[in-house]
Length: 284
Image (cartoon, rainbow, N blue to C red; front, side, top):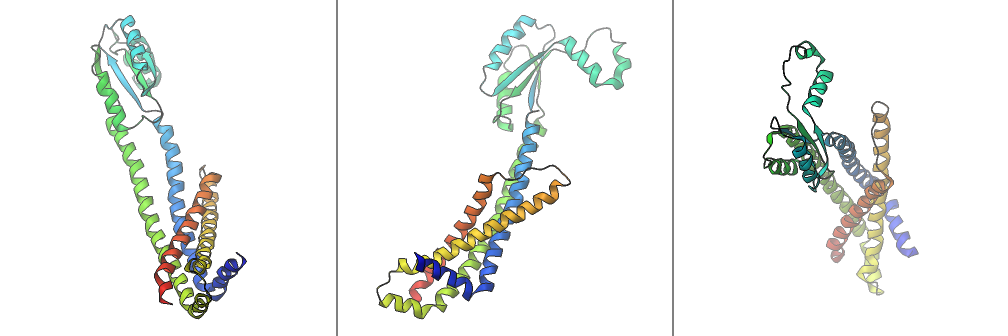
């Protein structure tokens, strides 16, 4: 084990510039991915706040008895997608309009009859506030014999789903591009180390060293570079977070999420080393 560690550290001393380039490339790859993850994290929190306002409003046919509406509320609350149902009477709807639409205050005094219908305001449960579920529940509610009209902001809910998808795809593509660059550069570093130590590896084989024994220092070297790159990426992400947080209140990664970034860096280092060593070890 000590020999493996010593040989791995030897690669850093022999190729300091390439080793620094490998670590920096991983760091910037994960930094970019981390930035998009931070944006996605905060966007998700904001979307969650907005999602809580996603609701379906069922306007009832005028004259629908309160007793019938009350029975229907029990049935709707039994839907697995529904979190709560609020009954808004005709009088409540008019009072709410008077409170929220004060610019039309003069018109209310001229009304001879209440033109606003009673309604159900249906709030969906977490995990069901998406376009497909909202449309499914709305279609189910259209079967109610006293449902006169159903509103749920179709375009708004659809744009909410599109925003989630775009943020995820963009982050994935950019992160994949930088990850590929990291694998190529780390692989180049490891390959040069293998070729530089060709004579030493040949002697090790003559004395009976297995390929696994020879590979271990290179794999460890890649893992160390990946870990260093991951830690540097978390530090850079925190610096960006600290700067932005002074202007806007945003959230940062949890400890588990930060460790996941480091783990991804280690995985990148390991994979690039394994691919490079496996390809070039047989040539020396």
